View 1 (tube, rainbow, N blue to C red):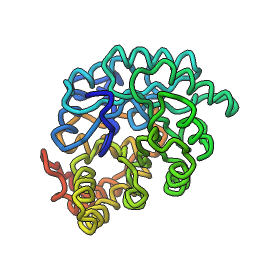
View 2 (spheres, rainbow, N blue to C red):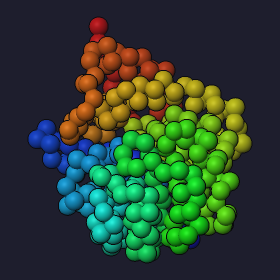
View 3 (tube, rainbow, N blue to C red):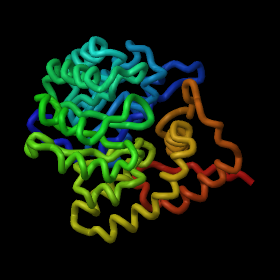
Length: 312
């Protein structure tokens, strides 16, 4: 990808498959990359929240990035993350990601004992200075330190390398609009990506987002919605979005487990193991509900097969 090329579309977050012993399943990870590209994803992002980055060793984070870049082999842009516990560690991630072929970088504020806002600004200044590819600032209420629209606009206006925001604080829709209003150098802000698993995509699209970053379990369904909107068929985009919404709602209850269970049933990964699972495991009623939801969206799944495991 040319560094001047704008990032736009469905940039899915690649999950990290594990084997039964809890180690990274590299073969399944390569399968995820091929699956996402074949399903119509416009870009891939890793390792982020849906990749369980917080449960990975630094060497594992780098290895995952290397595998994803290698397997994608230039077919679509790859965004590698640089979130660190300090500016120094984030810069190390930046340098490693660039050495490994990242087309862009994404970083949240330090996820542990984040500094005051001027310290967060210094953290992003260090990332921006080290970056030779575009930087996406991820603003999330889940991990890290939520940032105000004023602060995010300042990052864009004052730091050379920062050109994108991934907005998923609350209310993400209004924050996205406010950032767009506040940024003084409009040409420097190349776009705002929606987050929160795509649950608010229609509202975000109406506000002019440049893309969305959902999980990678149904990239073909997300791509269908995006492509319908881009073609001007907003009614079709909304129809498809409404069909997908029950799955997105269920994902909010069991995000990591559900992403991986869907990928397992689609034959993409070998098992749905999650490291340091913090949610209640899915039970038989959840599995039955998942069967029903997937039956409803089967026509949106354009590649592979869906393995229905009926629970009586």
